[in-house]
Image 1: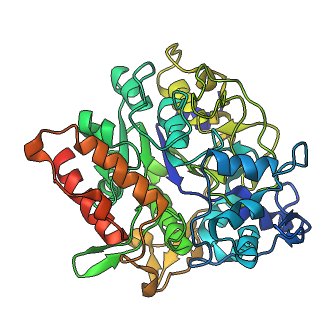
Image 2: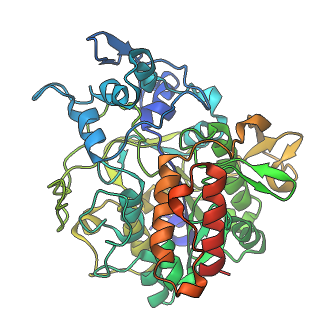
Length: 471
């Protein structure tokens, strides 16, 4: 067994929101031809028949409004187009046109980021490991894709409902606790809460903590065996200031998410013993409707079938960025010959900390795992440290061998709590409301959620429900 696997004590997963591989990493191909990104010649037809080319003009904010479609029917059009038997991955522009019926606006879905515009995620990818073939688990939205990370299945659903998540297969957190191991979901704060997992929070509040607790656990060396981190999902007021959403879901500022990734990474790096014994995976739950040129492959069918769409879970969703970080990984590793999806997360955690475990979905049992990339004979000493403003994240003093990488700071105006509620927050409010309705009447907020129209109102409602679920 490679020394890195033997020394591994902690696995940390940070799951971001709604960006495709090409949208974030496509132009890294210009730095390394092994990366299955963009040549610059990729196109998609618009509704007039003209071809919209890819470009590197993606904006941090205010470009992809309204939110691109990423529910099952949207993704079906994006992959297969509107011409039966036609070429795959040619329906992105036409799918986005349906949101606003504006040809020029629909072509913005082909905009991608150059590496210098998102320095944290691209630096970590180049310095550690990039997966060329990490796909979302199904062609659909946030909750069922995240369910694959938590359960290894979405129990036959492609929608945003949370109450279908059955009990046939326990969460990876319950498995860990049953095996005498430790595990936590770290959500950002009470106002941001946890996407789709509030029903678990109601029944198992002990496995949840805030991001500030994650930072404290890193600093004190108290990190659990397995940690799953959720970013801040809303711009909201806190004290005398405002917090920016860090999830990178449109129309939140992408730079806020890039800085959040740096904060997670630096929290681990700050504790040298923890750094040398931790494997960090950074990935995205689904592509968010944004262009990618790689057709999703067939996969092992799950035992469930979506009764609404007829989808048999025999094909993965669209490719997403995924980066693996550890001092035991050789620099500039690119994995091209193996396929991963979010079921690989519980599969890997189970393999490392539990061992043989039969009560898992067919998809998880067939999923590839990612422990074997920790191949170096000893941990690397070429530290990458991220700088924000005048100092390093977490106040960490530079060490010999540090390479200091400046981050880019979003403007204060990026925080817009009064913006119209996004589809993600709308779905989160509905999920929280369903959980709230299972509480005794005296514990309910009695807020009419049909009157929630802004991000600030959504954040306020979520905070009130969270105060009851996890006081």
